[in-house]
Image (cartoon, rainbow, N blue to C red; front, side, top):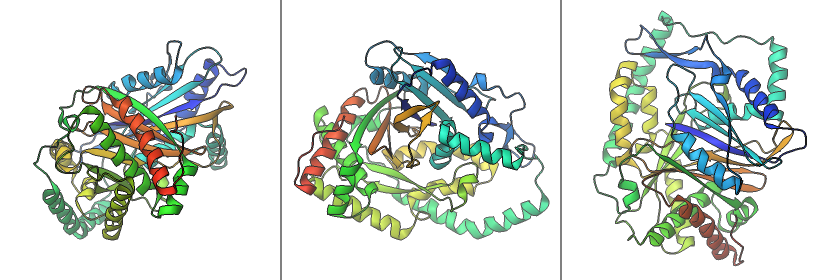
Length: 433
């Protein structure tokens, strides 16, 4: 399961690909997490641990690729989909960065690709942000002030006190784990979904499509209708799926498709914690509702119920089980959990926060950033959204064979947002590009 982002930059005079490639390598090498790889350990049985790659070479992870002349964004997006489907090298830190160049003097892009085991969405943002000038400068200053401490690999032999504390913690958490497991069983569906793209077998291929929405218009909808910006974006995804199904000539499914909406469980100081700290909500996307306002209100009501229950209850909290299973159970249980994803939900929809300040790389301003969420086994579509520079950037990742018309779905996102804006505010807006 790979996640990442496609960052697009405007060129500045005198900054060529060699300079950018050097910056990417230098800054990636300075991020401790990107030097970590997975190794087997003797204890606990069947376990694995993150350790520093003693033979780390950043040149194995950073590459330069040139696309054909023409529409740079179209070519870069197509290439990004192909690069996302390539497996990461075994035994190495599980990440890659690609500098994507086009015509001389034109825009360029950076594709950041991480395995989901290396970082969840929040941690991935922190890692990826390390390539930007503004973040790298702050990080370098802090590292210099600390004397650049090394990251030591974790010993394969656990501390006895740590093991005792873990055991006591397991006793207190087992009830919660069983409750989540029961919710998963109750929420599982055996009915076949009406949309053939959602039931297609995984092919291992990937396609990427993008859309942009006006963040100012998003806030105007929120002020007029209430709720959160995330509620609005979820309603837009629901309406876009309805449009897309109609364009395919498919009947609406008997049951609304389900979205898995990730929720970060990191505390205020959690940014420094490695690994994943996620839970999630399950949400029925109201594609059966014909009116955009009705879809938004249905989403708001469902999300309010989810929030009242909390992120650690219900079937959407299945991710917490990973924190409470011993390593040996992970080895045998992970394939089962992955295959169960198809039964629990149809599409992943996630919002990824970015710093509000302007960002650049080698003095070249960031103009757009399209996040890419991972596809679980058996899933065909994932939607990720982030706001930067007054725009909401939407990244859609799909199985290439299941959704060969992903561009049509991306266009439907922009069209649905325009219609929702008109319905809520009574004012027309031209679709965003």
